[in-house]
Amino acid sequence: MHAYTLLAPAKINLLLEILGDRTDGFHELVMVLQSVDLADLVELRPLGGERIQIHCDHPEVPTHESNLAFKAARLMQQKFPGRGGVSATIHKQIPVGAGLAGGSTNAAAVLVGLDLMWNLGLTQGELQGLGAALGSDVPFCISGGTALALGRGEVLSPLLDLDQLYVVLAKYRSLAISTSWAYQTYRQQFGHTYPQTPTALEQSRRQGPSVPMVAAINHRDLTQIGSLLYNDLERVVLPQHPQVQKLRDQFLQFEAKGALMSGSGSTVFGLTETRSQAETLAEQMRSVFPDPDLDLWVTKLISSGIQVA
Ligand code: ATP
Image (tube, rainbow, N blue to C red; front, side, top):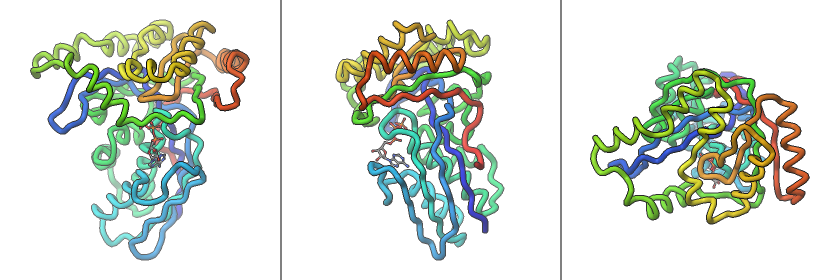
C-alpha cells in the first residue's frame, strides 16, 4: 500500500442564497461555488490495525474524532472494512472558521486518498455520495472548479471554468465565525420570510439571483459576475462584525470587480481580472488596514478539486 499526498483547495462562494427550511433540519440553498489555489496538503499513510491518527500543524484544528478528516477516514473504514488504519497529516494553509471549507476539503482529500490507497476504484459520483454524509461542501470539494450547488449543497452542476481570474482574500486571523451560528441566526431573523410550500420554494429558486449569475459565468462576463455576487449570510454576519463590512466596502472602493463575504465568513474576497491587479489590490488593502491581525492572500480561481500532489 502506497502513501499519498493530496492537494486540498479552498472554495469561495460567488453566490449563497438561502431558500428555506428542509425537513432534515438543514437549509435549502442555491450556491455558486468556486475553487481557489489556496490549498492544504494532506499526507496519508497506511497504519496497522484499524487505527486513525490525525496530525495537524494548526493549533485550532482538533486531531481527534471531531476533525472532519477523521470522520471521513472512519466512514471509509465502515464502508470498506478490513483495509487497515490510516494516518493523515494536514499541513494547514487555509485559515480556520473562514468560510473557505477548510475542514470539508480535508475530508474530501481523505475520501479521494483512501480510494487510491485501498485501490477501490470508486467513481467521483460514489465518492461525492459518501462525502455528502460528512458535510454539505464535501461533494463540491472533491470535484472543485466552478459549480452550481442546490439542495444542501450536494446537488452539483458544473459551470464554465472561471480559472485564470484572481481574488484577493482578506481575513482577520483572530476572527473565526461559526457556520452553525450564522445559519441559526439567519433562521431566527429571516425564517418568517421562507416560502411555505414546495411550489413557492420552486418559484423563488427560479426567480433568484442564481439564474443571471449562471448566465454571466457562461459568458465569462466578469463585470456582470462581480455585480451579481450575493450572500444571504452577510445579512447576519456583517451587522455583527463591522470590521468585515469595512473590508468588503474597501475592496469596492478600490475598484475590485466585485466583493463578497465567503460562506459564513469571516473571509471577504475582492475579484480581479489579472494577477497584477490582484497584487495591487492587496497592497492597497494593506495600506488602508495595516493591522497585523489582517491576513491577505492573492489567489487564482482554479478548475480542479482534490488532486494528487
Ligand atoms: P465552511 O466554509 O465549510 O463553513 P469554515 O472555513 O467556516 O468552513 P472550517 O475551517 O472548515 O470552517 O472549520 C471550522 C471548525 O471545524 C473549526 O472549529 C475547526 O476546529 C473544526 N474542524 C474540524 N476538522 C477540521 C479540519 N480538518 N480543518 C479545519 N477545521 C476543522
